[in-house]
Amino acid sequence: MNISKDKAAVLVVDDAPDTLELLHRNLASAGYQVYSAPGVAEALELLATTPIDLVITDLKMPKVGGLDLIRHVRARFRDVGIIMVTGYASIESAVEAVKEGAEDYLQKPFTDAELSCAVRDALQKVRFRRAALSEAEAAPVHSYGLVGESEPMRAVYRAMNKAVPVSATVLVTGESGTGKELVARGIHYAGPRARAPFLPINCGGIPESLLESELFGHVKGAFTGAAESRAGFFQIADGGTIFLDEISETSLAMQVKLLRVLQDGEVRMVGGRQPLHVDVRIIAATNKDLLDLVRRQLFREDLYFRVNVLSIDVPPLRDRDDDVLLLAQHCLGKASEELGKKAPRFSDAVLDAFRRYHWPGNVRELENVIHRLVVMSEGETIDLPDLPSVMRFSVPRGGVRRCTLADVETEHIYGVLASVGGNKTRAAEILGIDRKTLREKLKRNPPAAGS
Image (cartoon, rainbow, N blue to C red; front, side, top):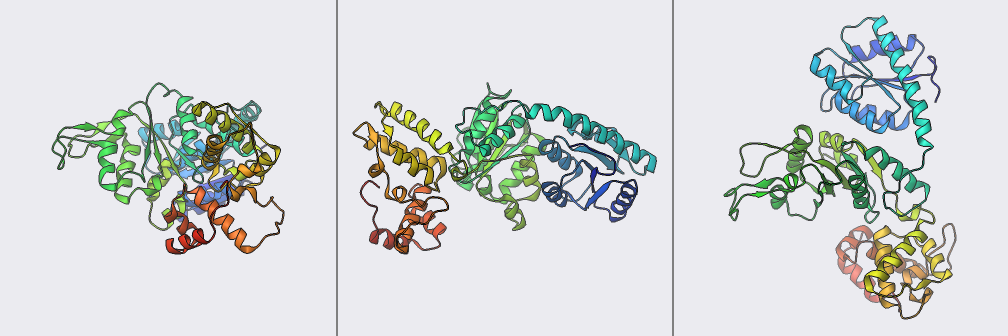
């Protein structure tokens, strides 16, 4: 994007209305397109929807400060310029702002000439940076061992390219079964921490009463049963990466402790008195909308901004075009090797069914289906009758299938059930019915042979 003075878009972020108005008026009179935000949350919403060339942000703001905004902008929008403005100037804050990626640093009060000069120089750097990035974008992307060539997956690879060489916290989002842990592993093992441990932690799978001890360790006698001191996952992973899967399942009390690790790089063992320094990169994942949880006060806003420095959204399988066929062949070879069987082939009808099916359980469901097909296969070809009924009668995208409403309901129920690994309680929640109703529907409509 070529920037000229009368077209450059500048976002001003300051919690003081007078300062916000002054900066807005001065920049607008100089010919810039100016946007204003009274805080970091509003600034991020604007950045997500509006092309911005330069961000001018205050340092001290309630809840989330300017340094956090700089980290987000630099991680997500590499081609956007940043100027830090503050009335609390110090050598330390100036160094920190530049270290995090600010082009310049202005102390209040500043003159119009100082502001004009800083903005002009920052935009010049943006021009140079964008020229360099346009060349880099043309370079081929690394797939990190993931399977897929669709544009949504290529976008994932590009985001991983940005995350690999740095130590910034990454938030991986996406539906269950899309491969969020594989993305985290790819980032770790392609980066400078590859020789250190990668520890995946399912935050929803560890009881709340044990999670603190598991993460941070405990000293002897800290609680009943603590017969000896034991290191936690953060100490074990020192120098490496911790993958906090389903971080949305942590309690508000645990979120405070995680925030301390992200802010200070320190953990305190249960029952311990002295904090311990750890050098651990955190990659978090969730299948929920964390921002919605923040609005509902179920997830801390400051922790959200800390974990969401870099974000990678893993697309559902239904949005990945013919990646499903590549994945099917990959899973076929993998399952056949594990089972010590000669790999059968898929008939054209099966491949067409794979392409049309909506895959509510995503890649995990595909892996499970193909593993079962290989186990059950007796011939050289897997054909349409071998597939689960829910897949044999999938509706083509954009098409209409001539069938009863009962057939559609049955297909949907078994699809949801497969997507949650057969968990009837979870399936009933998704379907909006109770377990008793679900059991009755499954009893009335059992899967056909081959399901």
